[in-house]
Length: 261
Image (cartoon, rainbow, N blue to C red; front, side, top):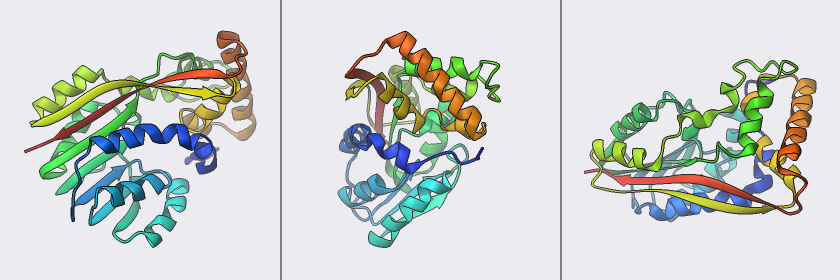
């Protein structure tokens, strides 16, 4: 077992499908010429580099808690002037004078989103922007069954249900809009969007979640037990969804952007 179970290669198996929400979130943001961006949950860094270049920042900091992901990101810091990375925990990160705090598919791992957004708001410069995207598909069998299998005695995942349910922190789009307004946003957008992915089969869903949702479980189990967990999860998923080829994976996400005075 490993405290850092993130696997860049596994995560990138669905890079094309995962990048569309990033593009949509980036499109909501205003350029920050000669400004500063912080990308929370930057992963392996290639999208952070795009964000830095496209929004014309002078300096962009990518933050992630996975050493494996940051090892992949290091090459982008060498290639792109003004781009740096650091290892830190999103649940405690605090900045100051940032023109744009950007978080693509990362904040759902952090509890208490009302307090979290207030902390991120305090990290902004005058006129700063906050943009984030979180999955909202935790009612789908792919996510429900991951949590149920984690509670089975054969696996005894510490935390059981909770470790596979990061979505418990995610709020409704309207609630995010209310929080951003209360924090003083002068412009904002909050929306729910469904991304339809044509995957090769239901088994491909297993490979999708292995690169993201299942990483906390992977960090708490030895190799043999985790392999058994994945086999059991695959069995339950096929029982629920049947053997569909191809499989249409309807993945809901919440995208929010706000600008402050």
